Structure formats: structure tokens, C-alpha cells
Length: 416
Ligand SMILES: Cc1ncc(COP(=O)(O)O)c(C=O)c1O
Image 1: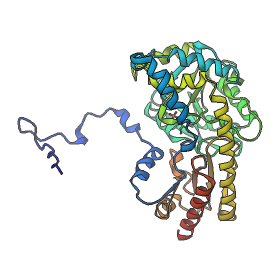
Image 2: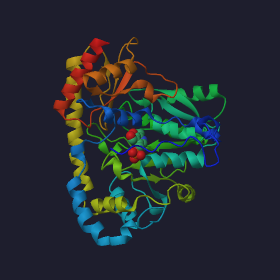
Image 3: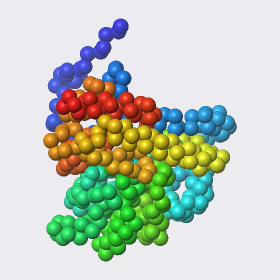
Image 4: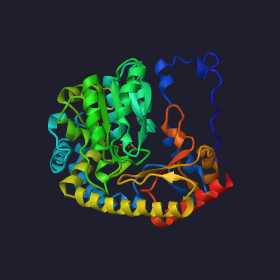
């Protein structure tokens, strides 16, 4: 083994290095809270024993269409040569924009070229929303619980986050006027995940969507409509989304991604917003990453061009339905009378709530020892609520592994 080079303790003229505390940090770094959800990936990778992970919101490994990807890489990308690896247009590759517009035409999300911006995943769409709309101190309403990577992104722009309650029909929109009155100012934005919410798995009712649109218009607030799971409905009827209901209203800023329906590592998503906003987003994106990963845009475009997406979604919906039902069966067997949980009609997650006395952060440590992982509820609230709840991703495990994982979780609860 070669010896590691010792870290320098003085500079070239003999001065000691600056301490991290004395660095000229931007004030904005105080709002950088990171993500407990994402950090769990590295924690789990460090474990050497068998773990059934319900932690990350990743598609099932078997659900990623590798064979189609390989074929496309070997043919289309190989044929495109260096052009596939050059800088691309900020708004996205023409091939992907055209194919996506054509695909969306057959869905309730149909849109037009000037409303479309290809992004580096859904996270970049959320970041761009923060960048162009949020000033320090602006009030932003979020669901409690919510996807805290989304609220954390808004926090980095100085948002003053206000949590609003949710139930089985999603955000309790009827509670917002009173909350806003108490806050004494109008929200600049309302961040919602309308379909198969992360982390609860519930969908917002049509009545509430309509009421939220009406309130947003009254208040002049942007609805940040984050919907990565809407195409993964496996049960129940379609509920029109904000894009559809808003009819192109500039207050609706829709964030979408291929992460959950193709693969998260592609880092390809899109924003659908008013053309005047898209023009600003292009300027904003140019100061971030210039353009989205070109080979992965071409890969996604060709996947769409071959007509692969719709049959792929049909398979995913059926598989995730099976997996969700398997998790319900295992939960009934091991947690009946000990917890309550949601019954999603799509997406990836369900939300388990115990009695007040159960601390799921402690349960996490015991679960890890027993070989099961989840995300503790506190990770989904900026104020640390939901200490007795947890999120389970049912999408990434087979029914057999789910049964094993849920039985391990029950053992961990016994030990707690
Ligand atoms: C609600 C929600 N929004 C955004 C994202 C981020 O999507 P992406 O991986 O495409 O950045 C996720 C991923 O878990 C999510 O659940």
C-alpha cells in the first residue's frame, strides 16, 4: 500500500491554514440544510449486512429499461458521434423537446414548445422556481409532511416556510386562509405534490385543487406543482392536475421528471410554465449548468420516439400495484392494531403512523441492526414534526423482500 500524502499544516510562507469557521461563508449557507433522505443512501451503502431498504424513492432495479437503453446507446448515440457529447441548447435538445411534446399531446398534460424547459431532473425545476420567485423572507406554504428536499431548496433562497396540515385528501386547503391571516402576509408561493405525495402517498382531491387555484389567484401566489408520480396511477380515477385545471395560468409552475418513470440517474426532467417565465428560467439555468446532460436527453428522446414509454408505464403501474398490495398484506400481518398507514392509488410511498410514544428515529437504528431501512418521519418536516411516523417506499422491493423487511421492522418495534 502506498502511504497517504500528509495534509499540509502550513502554507508556502509558513502560515497556518484558515479554520473552516473563519472562511467568508455566504449568509445563504445558513439555509443549506442538506437532505436526510439523500444522506441515507451513503449510510446504507456503508452497511455490510443484508438490508431490505424501503428508504430511497428509487424505481425498482428491474423497472429500469436497461435493454432498451443499451440498444439506444449502441445505435443512436454511437451514430451521433461527437455531436451527442457537445454543449446543447439550454432549453433542451430539439429531439427530446419534440418527442416529449408529441407524447404529452396524448395526455392531459399537453403543452407547447414555448412553455417547455428541459431540466436536470425535477430538483433543478424546484431550484429554478426558488431562484426566480423567492426573495429572502418570502412566505412559502408547504404541506406537512412534505418532500423536504423541495422545502430545503426554497430555504436556500431565504424562504420563510409555513407548514400546513394534510389529511387523506392531501393539503387541507380550506385551512390556508386562517393560517395566512395569522401570518399577516400573503404567501409568495405554495409548494404542493398533488399526486401520491412524497411522503404520504395520498392525492389531493379535486375540490381542494380548485380551491387552491382560486386562493392562489386571489393572493397572487405561485403554485409550485411538483408531480413526479402522476403518471404512476395504478388505481382509482384520474384527478385533473394543476396544469390541466389552470389552463395555462402563469401562476402554475409545473415541475416534472423522468426520474421515477425511467431512471433517476439520467437527471432529465422538465418544467412547464408560462413562456415569460421560461425565458427567465433559461437565463437562470445558463448560470447553473448551461445545458442538461445531452447523451441522456438523446437517450430519453429515442426511448419516446420508439413508442416505448407508454407500454413501459403500463408495466410499471401493474408492478407497483402488486408491490403496494404486497406491502399492505405484510403490514396487516405484522402491524395490525400497532400502527395506521395510508393506502395509495399510485406512486412509490406509504406513510405509517404509530402511537405518540414511538420514536421512529430510534426505531431506525434498531431497524438497521435487524436489516431493514426506512426514512423517519421527522425528515419530512422543517419543524421536526412526525417523530412517530415513517415513510416506506414500496416500489423498490419484490413482495418476498417486502414481507422479510416488514417482519424485521416488527421485530425492531418489539425491541424498541
Ligand atoms: C416530490 C419530489 N419532487 C422532486 C423529486 C426530485 O426528482 P429528481 O430526482 O428528478 O430531481 C423527488 C424525488 O424523490 C420527489 O419525490
